[in-house]
Every structure is written in C-alpha cells, then in structure tokens.
Length: 215
Image 1: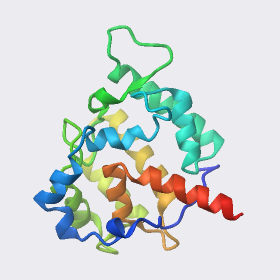
Image 2 (image 1 turned 30 degrees about the horizontal axis):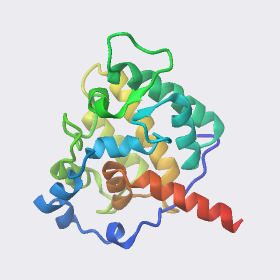
Image 3 (image 1 turned 180 degrees about the vertical axis):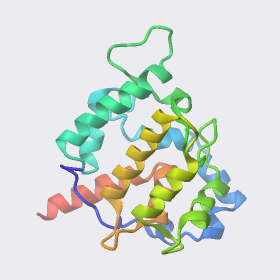
Image 4 (image 1 turned 90 degrees about the horizontal axis):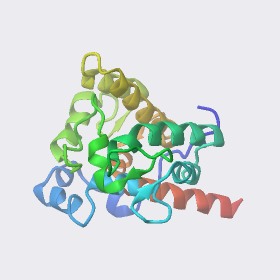
C-alpha cells in the first residue's frame, strides 16, 4: 500500500470514542444515525463531494483521498476504480457520462454484494448488523478487529461467484485498515462506526491538517 500515511488510532471526539455497545444498538441510536436529509451511506460518500454540489467527479475522489492521507498513486487508482464502478450505477439518465460522475442521491444503487449488511438497500444504518461484526469476528479484542479477523469477516460475507463484490470489499477494508489501525494492529470499533455514520473522513482530514501544521 505504497504512498499511504498510517494514522494510528484516530482520536475521535469523546462522544464517539466513549459510545457503548448498548447505545450503538439502541433504537434511539438508529434513529439519530438515520436522521437528517442524507442517509448514512450518502453521508459516507459526501466527504468526497468537495464542492458540495451533490456530484462526485474523479478529481474530487482524488482530492478526498489525498485529504485523508492516501498517496498520489493510491488516490489516482481509487479515483478510477470508485468512479468507474459507481458512476454508471448512479447516473441520472440512460447515457453514461465519460466524466464518470457519482450522484450522491443515487448512491444506494451502487451498493456491492458480499458486504457486511450494515447499510440496508436504502443506505440506512442497521445497528444489529454492526454489532454482529464484532460478536462473530472480534476474537482478540471485543471492541476491535485484527487484519486476520477482517479477512475472516470478508470470507463469511462472500456471495458465491460475486467476484466484483469480493474485490470491492477487500479493497475497502484493506485501505481502511492500513490508514486507521493502531500501533497494535487493531482497527477499533469507534473507527469502523465512524465509517458508517459518515464522520470518519472529516476526522481524518482534520487530524492530518493538525499534524501538518505541527511539522
């Protein structure tokens, strides 16, 4: 994963880092996460809409990747991969655009198979599925996943012959793990939770800016 900058254990606001398992799975938490004008899945990708116009172009995906610490090579690869995959699926008309724009309002159409199920078909957060990830696969630490445990989870979620889904899932989790694992090789629960509620990338960008200002 050349060109990435390991962030270590991301320092989240206390409201995130102290959130308990029971609160995450409660009906109130579900309502809070799924409230607002955007679904959690839309919030997840909206970070890459750098000019806030509801459309994500490849150069915005590149800029967003750079903002969270990815190197030039990985950011370029991600822009082609993500927009090439999601652009045609989320388009508003019948004719695909050569610029491969991703329309945030249609992002649920881009959900791939062999995933965790934490987002439902409408892009809403499903607390029970989130908790299930840790109940079934967090063998080392109840509130974190190792690289091996992530592999186990991906294997368990695989749909037979869904090769595109397998690759998409591997790519997403691999990049997240490299960028956000702590010094002990653990990807913490609140970090993964922040991926799903859309707050992780903003936190990573702010942390990176702080680190650069200190240098």
